[in-house]
Every structure is written in structure tokens, then in C-alpha cells.
Length: 407
Image 1 (cartoon, rainbow, N blue to C red):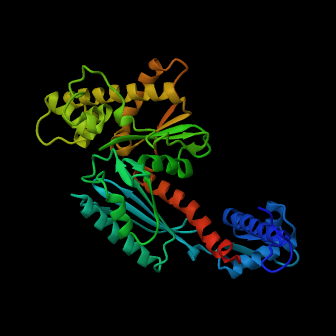
Image 2: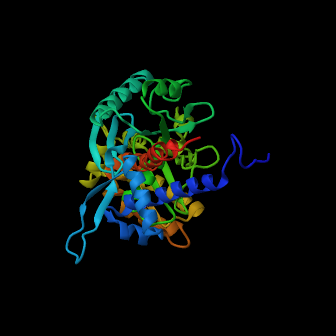
């Protein structure tokens, strides 16, 4: 299709090109302010390679759009003090949610990444309807704290989000969460568009942004708790697989001779999860003769104290975890394995040394580092916030600058 120049309804390619370049320059300046701020015009010119007049024009447009603001002058230098700029944090807000069986961990951040509200709320999720209602009330409260203007919401949840069919798969620990129609009902309840990511994938992104994975190109985050999952970072990017199910190591096959390997529910939860998750640890301790009210925490606490039955139960857990990690290392060759979750994190002092020793004998090129996440229970929320902020910053810019362009 040809384009005529001149005349009524004509398109001026020079004007269009100028407009596109202006938006590109403004985006570059906005991004450098976000990273470097508070920052002066000369610093922005040096960081972007743009001329000082171009920087001044971009700053004027960004200020008019309410995306940046001046925050005083740089002091201590000879000559005229330089005016400093930073992004306007309240131009957008992000909510991150970690949706678990027992707890919903939630946080609200502004565009600077500053956490304004952080709370843990009992899930009370006896059904999908109850969980959606609980999430809706949490989001309403956080939106009120932000003045009602939420830009983006990211939910971390067990399972795999089937985008095409708008449903979740492989989320057996949340009652009704994998039933058809859940995503649609959630969309009706939440006030703005939202994204759903696998919770352990988000934990890996949280580890990349705030924890031991910072600066690494290849690492995995393995969560062992009520459920089991893995987030995979390859070449610095989250790897999801063809259907979004990469890292579902709950379904790794274990020894067929294990008494728990073929118990009811193994197909639904996965063989590795059935034997190595918190319920698996409890079942092993019961089989070995532990009496009374048994929890995974009790098993690990008593193993620390030298109780022989608990020590044997933890030895079984060590065996399961080490065998699974040996397979992960053989397939992915990561630089680092980060352990998290209720068992992977809180029980790591009992597990870590033995798992490392086992890996020394099962990985011919030597094992990667195996460490415990420093993020604890915040890993998923931090990953949700990091993901949501990247999207929100782009949305806010496009609405304020690109969206204001004439058609």
C-alpha cells in the first residue's frame, strides 16, 4: 500500500519519525532517571549519549506528564548547582501476591520499588470461591492504601497457568483452584488487569533480583515444603518450557521400591513431592515408628536433638533431595542451587551438609554451590513485585507519553 505525501489526510513521514525519536529519547531518559536518580541533566547526557537540549526537552515532557519531578540541587560543587531529577514514585502502584495454602503474602510498592505495605494474611482457602474473596479483599485494602490507583497486580500461585483455556493445572494443594472458570471469576473480582505466574518461578526471579542469584546466568531455585517446585534461570532469563511447566520437579520419578512412591495421590501430586514434601516427611516418620502429633517441623527439631527415629526420617529426606538434585544438575548444569520453602529453608541446617556430600559422589564434574535462600518467605512476593514493576513502569510511560500522541 502506497502513502501519498501532501494533500488532505496525508501522512508526514518526517513528522512521524521525529515523534518516534522523541518518544524513544524520553523513554531512555526516564529509564536512566529510574536507575540513577536523583540525577542531573549533565549526568543524563553522559549516561544516554543525548545532547543537552534533547535532555532538556525530554525532561520537560516527562515533568508535564507527571512521570518525573525535580528534587532540589546538587550541593558541594563549585559553580552553579545542578538541578536533580527522580521518577515520581506515586505515578503507579504494583501489588504482589504469594498465594499459598496456609498464607497469602501481599505487598504494595510504588514505581521506585519502595514497599509501602507488607502483610501476611491467613488464606482460609477451603474453596476457590473463598480464596478469590480473600484475595479481592486484600487487593481492595492495598488499593485504598495507594489512593485507588493500582497499575498492575501479579499473583504467584502453585500450578501452571493455561493461558489459552484460562485455567490452572497442577495445583492440588489449593482446593478447587484448578477447576475451570477460576481465572474468569478472579478477573471479575480484581480491579485491574493482573498476571499469574507459577509461585516458584517468581521465587527464582526474586532470588535473581534480591538474593543469591543476582548477577548469575544459570541457577535454579528449589522449594521444598507443603509442595515441591523449581524455578529455572537460563542465560539470565526465566525458563518456562513449551507449556509453562518447566521446573515441575514434583513429578520426578523416584525409586519404585519406596513405600510411599505409589501411595494414593502420587499421580496428582507427583512421586517426588509425595515422598519428599512436608506430608511425605510426616508419613516417613510415622512409618518408622514416631508417635504422637507429627509435623515436619517436629521431625527436623528432634533430628537436631539426636532422636534416632527423626534422624532416620531426615536421612530418607536427604536421600530423596540429593537424588532429585543430581538429576537437575545433570540436565541443567547450574552455577547455583538455591533451596527455599519450609523444609528447604527452615530445615536446611539439618539437610544441607548431607545433601552436599551426596552430590559430591553423584556429579562427575563436581556439584554446583548449594545454598539456602536468604529471602525466606519473601522470595515469591519479591519476584512478583519485580515482575510487576517492569510491566507497570512501561504501562505508566505508554499511557502518559505514547498514549498522548495524536493519531
